[in-house]
Amino acid sequence: MTDSENFDVATVELEAMRSAYRALAPLDEAGRHRALRWLFEVLDVGVHMRMPLPPS
Image 1 (cartoon, rainbow, N blue to C red):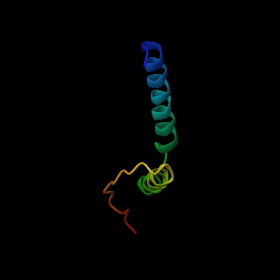
Image 2: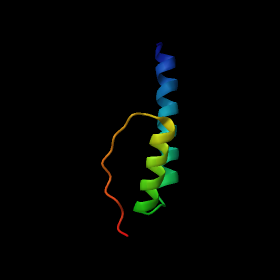
Image 3: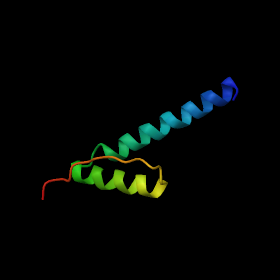
Image 4: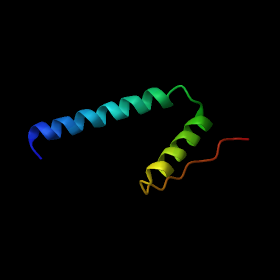
């Protein structure tokens, strides 16, 4: 990859992180849990996280 391509990828990744934070920040713990679990499943990223279940 060229320096320009690396910069473009880094810029896109940073914007994705900012967007995710803006979307997840206002949610409560249970909402973040559901959203992240759904996202990991949909993207099939193979991430295995141990997330405590929210209190009932």
